[in-house]
Length: 497
Image 1: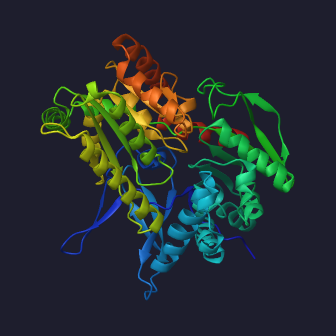
Image 2: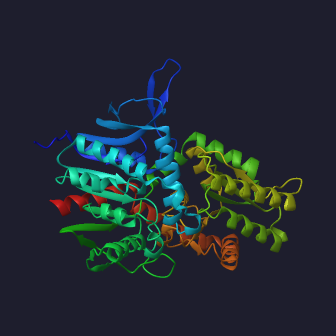
Image 3: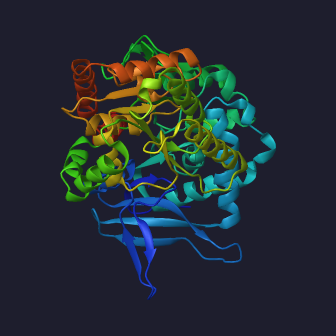
C-alpha cells in the first residue's frame, strides 16, 4: 500500500493558534493578533514566510456533545499557510491540558514533587490527544518534510510520527525546565517520554543545564549513549550560579539513530520594543504612572502569573522585611506587582492567589499612610503597551521565581531600558540568569540573600546601573527571538542534509 503524504513541507505543532479567533455579532470569523506582540507566536508565524507550503497544527475546543471534524483554514498573513485545528472536546482539553499537563507534569518539571499527584493524570487521554496531533502532522506532511513540535504537552507526538512517517525530519523544543534525573524519574511514564523524544532528529532546551539533565536522564533511564561534551556557547555564563554549566552534551545515540541536542534560549524582540516605546499611547501610560503611582518615588515592578513556582509570596515577605528595617523608605518606594490570575479554576492556583492577596492587604494595612500605599497589585492581564510603560518608569525590575524555564520579562525589561539605567534583580533559578550578566542574582529560598539583593538594587549608583544594564541590553540584542528560531532550524537542516 502506498504511503499517504500531504503537500506541506513544514509542519508546526503548537497547542495555541497563530492568531486569536473572534466571532462578530453577525457571526463573521475574524483573526486578530495576540494580545502580547512579543511572544514566540509572531516569530513562529514568520517562519512561514521562508518555508512555503506550511501547516500550523493547533487545537480548537468543541462541546462534549458535538462531533465536529478537524478543520483546515487558509491563512494569508503573514504569508500563505494552512492552519489545521484539531477538534478536542471540553473534557479532553480539561484532562489533557489542565489536569495531566498542569497538575501532574508541571510540578515535576519545576522540581516541586510534593505537588505531584499521580492520581490526577489520565495517561490514556494524554496519549490519545498526542496521537491526534501526530496523525494530523503525518497527513499534512509531504515526503521528507520538517515537523517542529513544541513543549511538554506534546511529548509523545514524535514517537507516533516516527512510526508512521520515518521519512520526516522531527525537531522538538522544550519551553519549560527539564529537571534533574532523580526528580524526572518520579513520573511513571518516564521511559515512554524519553523514548519519544529520542525519536527526534533535534531536541532543544533553553539553557545547557536543561540539556544536560535530559541527556543524563536518557543515559541513565534507557541507556542512550552520550556524545562528547563541548564548551557552552559564549551566549551563556559558564560558571558561578545555580544553573550554570561549563560543558554540554552535543548529541545522543539510541536505537541506531543520532539525536542532536541544542541549548537555545528564546529571545525577545528589542527592535519591536524600541518602536513600541515611541508610541503616543505608551507615553500617555508613562504620564499616568508618574502621576498616579510613582510620584517621584522609587518604583519597583514585578510581573508574573499566579503560580506557586513564581515566588510571589517570597517576594512580598522580603518587601515587608525591607519596610520593617528601613523606615526612611516609607513613602519613598512603591512596588507594582502585576500578577495575572490563573483562569483554570485549579485549587492550588486559587489558594496561591488568595495568599498573595492576603499578604498584600496585610502589608498595605501595616504601612500605608494618607498619601502612600506601598504595594499596587494587579491581577488583570496588562496590555503589552502598558507593560512597556511600566518597564520604562520602573527603577527596579524584581523577578525572583523559585524556578522558571527562562523568563522573558527579565529580557524585555533589559530591552526597554536601553541607555536608561535601572536594576534587574533576578532569581538564579531562572534560565535567564545564565544569560544576563549584569543582573543582581539572588536565591529566593534565602531570606538573607533576598534582603541583600533588594537593598543593593535600591542603593546602586547610577554609574553601576548603566554599566550593568548596558551588558544586559547587549545580550538581548545579540540573540533575539528570530535568532532562536533560525539557529534550531539551521542545525536541523545541516544535520539532515
